[in-house]
Length: 492
Image (cartoon, rainbow, N blue to C red):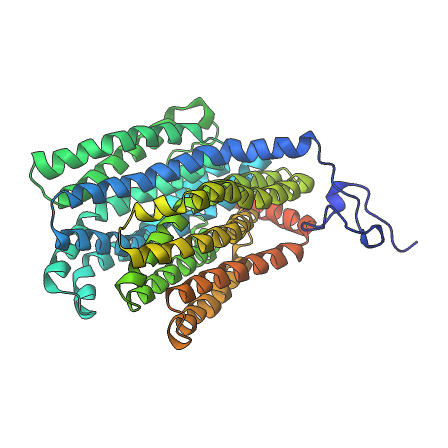
């Protein structure tokens, strides 16, 4: 009498095993693998596919910019562009990216609830908060020359780096509009307009690079100006679409007083998500710095391996973004069963997609390795590292999707501590000990990458398994109703 089995999907906890191996241990009935699962997968692909293309094209613009700078045949300028881009991404773009992710929670849930006006209010608050945060970030970028000078980089590289970093400040400012508007649209399941805009933007970018660098004779700084202009055009398209599109007619809200209230609440919701982003991002950069201490061969092989990681991870980001949106929408609809199944399928889809890509990667690993270098020592290390890339991205796909799903649920406060433990307390120490103290070298760094991703995945799974989804949905709706009432009072 005490062991009553649940009768419907809504009673099932998130990570309950769906396929019991032994009848005696089966606690819950198996999930019906019918059209509903295929529909869920199609929904995730419908949202994640265009986002994946968008992310890939953004990556391509960076590669195109480096290519044009390389045409100047000046190693100092190439080093300067690489350093400046990394620095601006770390102190500027990553922070703005993190603070905009609160919209993945707020707008996706409000859209699911049908409270369209609050979607626009949240967008305005995000722009205000990100703009305020960007001020010290831009000041820090202007001081990049002094910072690089303190760590002993050659003065000619420092001078060129500081100029290029300063030229990227307009790009950082435009990033505020891009990140917030992309999330505003994606959280409402609008993904194709930004994809087509990015295709156009990527097509025009090399034209801008050529004009600014060679026609106007602005040299390597022309690449930075080209990036700022192309991003500004992209942001302008997004703004025009949001303002004029029928799809955003109900959710677009012109600037108003309501956007200036609730900024503190937005900040404290966005701060943990930002901590999650920068903790993982910065710690990977720390291990990349470690690779430079292991010699030129290790530095080169690690850099090539991380190029494949960053490329494959775009697939995980696409799946994760689609999953997070759909889970947030389901929470707004008070549909626990839908939120649970979207989470399950999304978590499974990421490693499956990585596995499909890995077949190609491993089948052509030698041509892919020699595409970057002809050095035999580097090539042999890369051939081994590519196997580790596959394992890492299988795990990374799971933890990345879970991470984004937790943001969609509004659980970034708890998730940030998982990230801190996994990447600060486990990954970096393991990398240092394995690479230097135990003498494993560059492979020790990859052991660290695996330890960080695995720890994060285990922590996120444990966090989701411990959640009371009914309580979570109630709390989300209480928050949305409270913020709606506060917004209405601010207009009185």
